[in-house]
Image (cartoon, rainbow, N blue to C red; front, side, top):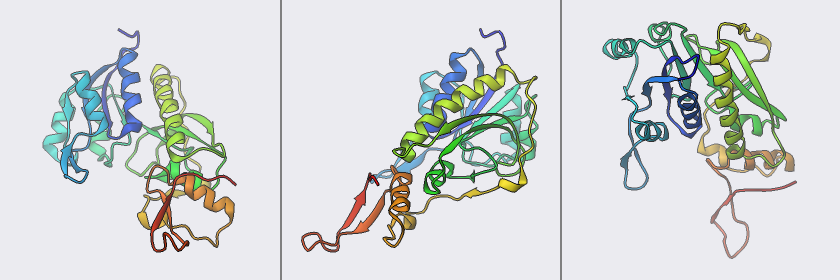
Length: 257
């Protein structure tokens, strides 16, 4: 076992969270339970499908919990019974109530894919590319009841290159997040929490399919940023202008300026 092995509850749902869970397992931490979103209908057949974190947790025979809400008192009691030192939250998909935040001995740590307070919210990776940011990173945050408002324990930065898409940047930040949480847990009692600067707050609202339409009155640089930010979802699109394809929708995966 790791010399500083901790009893951890892990909460996460998408691909971004999977590498973090694996890192915690590989460094000898004791995963008492994995929380993820309930199985959802997926694809054209609307078949109930497990999220990536659940699939990984099943590989390791970990205890899996998929409550609709952690506001439910019975669910809170189940979580408390796991007797965790800390809860690690990575793109879980639910805001945690105060009771849950205060249950583990050291509270709850969140990995957020931006340099807070810039890009609080649901789509920090895409919004950073869309805005033309040249740098981003991950923050390890001591969670409070707000949306990405907690004190920062540790940050790791990452350049955004001119060829980065949301997918490539997602993959880089997922690796940084996994490294960052291991570092934070090893140094937990030595890290100094930093209050977020109220001056630099921006919000990364959820992506909508309507935003995918290209406005050709924008500059070439802005259009390029839109195409890169919206790959792999929702994919930038426009109406074809040629006679052969008139009226068809073209989906644009990449571009250069």
